[in-house]
Image (cartoon, rainbow over all chains, first blue to last red):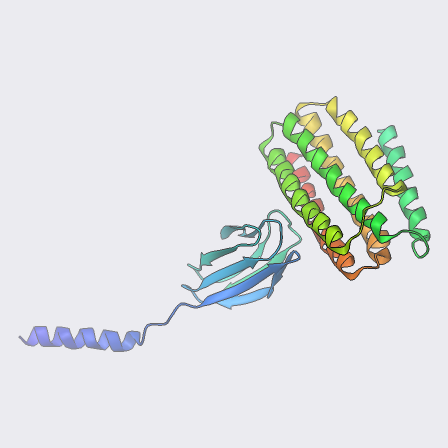
Length: 104
Length: 173
């Protein structure tokens, strides 16, 4: 009985410590005229990055040892951020397109 | 090699000569024609590469060129239609087409890695050349704001392709 109570209290404590659940945010990046805008964004693990491609040609958001997202012309593509770090990313088709994603 | 150098040189002279006369000479309908022609040339080059090459990186690169230039040329056609501009043939367009035809004939005699290397090297040189023309002649001479804007996007695209081609060239070494 006592052990059940203390277990319940412990569970309650854990819940309190965990605090209210943090809602994942969606961070939007526009790709237009071969430019990522904004060029630098920050996110936390669990957030979603959404790239909106306003160009007539396909682009990618590619980070070496990170991710490779194809963004078709006139469409959006998303990435759920899974780990912390600084990711310098570029477009594989047009390597002069560069941007940075900071993940805490 | 000598033939390629001389034709490239002739073209460079023509472009810089026209550049000197930029203030007085080149019109928006001619600029639209040159930009469109430059795209068509790279589409033709890509189609040739897709027929001849067996290298997956070269094939992927050629497909990227085909897709991008077709998309941008469609955008250019939509714009000239909207602006009611009729693209007009001119010496620069003709020189570009002539040099490109010679290059394609030369490349047609090659196969395997000889072709791949020559195609990618020409892609680097060609995009560099078009970038020069866009920066020094076409963009400064364009009068219509929307045409200028499309050319500026075109410059970023060609610069991107040049870097992409340089990357493919570096991987083949």
